[in-house]
Image 1 (spheres, rainbow, N blue to C red):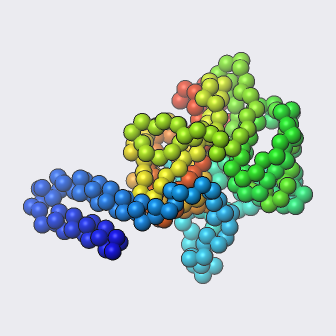
Image 2 (image 1 turned 45 degrees about the vertical axis):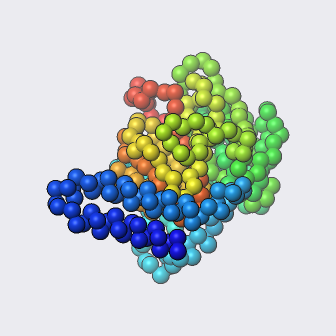
Length: 330
């Protein structure tokens, strides 16, 4: 009955708009479309109220091939949902290419965002699937200015470092500043998302090692918005990027249609929805990755019956022209 009522309400609004004279129809088109979205969003939230009471996040769709059960890619030669444009990219799981990366032993990696053309991103974002006996060893001599952030999607790892040792499991993270020696060992089924970049020194102060988990991070105030926001790193000038965790219940969406110089690297951890990038609107779901270049219009609306959560890279505390003076990261 609830579904019927919601459908009838939306249909009635559209029908009423169609009966208006053309000038008024045109003038009211934007308001009608917004009203329809609000109505459908409210119904979606009502129909999926059970998701709000859940306390445990489910990231199993990020790496699992079961997420593609409804699309038989082997029967669709040449088809992919992935798109690469001048100012954005959507990289979907069927397009991932797994290979080895220096420093990672007995480990498969899939690079999703890089400084390479055509992205020319300020950072690198890749997935890590550690096998039994998998180990990573940092290289401070070869890459003295590299900083690294890791987020555990599944499984657990053992970290050896000056502030350790540490055991990190799903939903845990760690930030390794430039020149900070560390080793990562697979304790079982470890699957990670990793962000790396060349640190830009705005002062003599170097960022410090940092670790934690998303549950202990508070939800921050976001004026004008209804989604929940957590920030993994301190909001201090020595940190030239931050990692955001953003939660949306079904029907919630970004109020601000953002356009800014900051770059983003996003991995949808759970849920599904619609992401606007430039003039294109993409259906997205858990496991999809998105690169957003400077000034690309961006917006997200959560759909379905489960809450959405994504992890998002954002460069911070640096002037937008710093790369022009100091050279692009490599």
